Every structure is written in C-alpha cells, then in structure tokens.
Length: 337
Image (cartoon, rainbow, N blue to C red; front, side):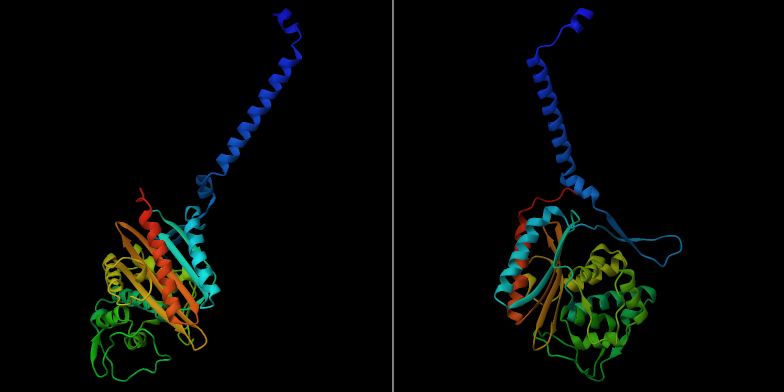
C-alpha cells in the first residue's frame, strides 16, 4: 500500500482529474441556480395576503387570500392587453385604460395600469346593492319595504346608455328598486335607494374591504381597477353576504341589459354577471365594466376601466380586450385545482 501511495501520478492524469472536478462543480452550481429561478420558487417567494373580517368575538372569517404578486404565467396575456391599449392610445381616442383579470379556478391574476383612478359612475351601484343586502341580513324585511317615488331627482349628467326607469308617483319595494338599479342601471332608482341607505353599513363595507370610506358629500367617487374588483369578488366568493344573498346579487347582475362592452367580445349566450358604469364630462368620457364570466366550468373575472374622447371608441376597446381574454381562456386546458 505504501509503495502504491508513494508512486507519483502522471501529470496528464492529475490535469484530467482537475478538469472533471471543475466541470462537475460548474454543473451543480448551474443546476442549483436554475432550480432557484424556477416558477415554483418564485411563487413560493411571493407573500400571501389574507384579508379577514372583523366584528366577531371568537372568529375572523377569511374574505380573501391572495398572492401579492401578479402571476408570471399570465405575462403573455398582460402584454397582449397592454398592446391593445397602446394601439388605441396612439389613435388618441383613448387616454388611459386599466384591466384586472382573475382566473377563479387557479387563483392566478394580473393587472394592467393598476394605479390609475377612475370616476365610478354606475359601478358604485354594486356596493349599494351589497349594502342593502347586508341591511336585510341585519334587519329582516328591508327588501320588502315600500318607498314612494314622489319627486324627481336632479341628475348631474345625461347618460349615453338608457334603459327602463321607475315612474314618478309610484311605490316600489327595495327589491324592485335594486332590480331597476342593477338590471337597467336606472339612476332615479339608485338615488331613491341612496336616500334610504344606512350610511354606517355602506361605510363599514368599504372599511371591511380595506378601502377608504365613501364621502357622500363628495361630488364623485373614485376607484382603481383592482379596488373595484373586490366588490365583484365579494359577491362571487359569498365571503361577505350569506350564500343566498350573494346568489341573489349575482342573479341580478346576470340580468343586466347592457351589451355594448365586454359582451361584444364573447359568444352570445355565454353566462355573465356584470355591471357597467359611465362617467366624465364634455372634455373626457369614461366607460367601465366588470364581469364574472362563466366559461365551461371555468370562471374568470374581468374588470376594464377606460378614459377617452368618445364612448364608441371606449366601447370597442372593452370588446377587444374581452375577446382577447376569452380566446386565451378558451384555448387553455381546464385547471386541475
């Protein structure tokens, strides 16, 4: 044994052994780096934000549990939406647009231009709907209360998309007024409801969602695209209202007769629960829509908010974005989650 160890190794053998060790070390290092850069690791490094509901002594129900990072797997969709918006902005018919998308089966989400704020317009009718249903849960019989429409309201602006409206001199139950407000987006029904709303209840709704309380003396309300989407998510998750009232809210939204936006980008007959809103003035108009789209047992939420020079261009932008998202979702396999 001593004689073997005492023998000198050939120089070529030593060099070869050194090369093998170096190559192996580099290979292991690269493998570890690739593993660390894998999507699963990125997802693991993204913090999960849990929003719980206060107001109980012994429990804190979960409202949302979200990864704070947008999903990398939706980066291609995000880029496609950004390109569509950019093309419209080059024509100078659109000044700003924001999009929030969430795949309910996989919990993946993405957002475009998330910090831009928009006038809520008729989108504010969704938190009003949720508030009255919460009032019903706190005091049974609210929905059957009758309210007289005895004098007209002074509405700030004319609307571009008209539908059915309540009639002066008639009585309506709160349930009927909610239908006019959501299905036909009737501003008179909305004004009548807001005149009878429990302001503490609606302010608590905003507070529970982690949003600034609405100022009813302010002339306008503002939302980001991701912020407003919380109301639609609350209805779909049944995380704030009872299951029965959440279902009732979604049913009303599914009867909305507005068809000049997101619905133009998907096939006729596709089940959709949605609400649109228009706002702005003579210098700039705004058109928004938020929709829960039920696609072959694969449900997703799409909210689009826009600013520009004319409603026709904004309406077409909503449709183009909707079609891009629909085509992407239709081509994706059903999630195993």
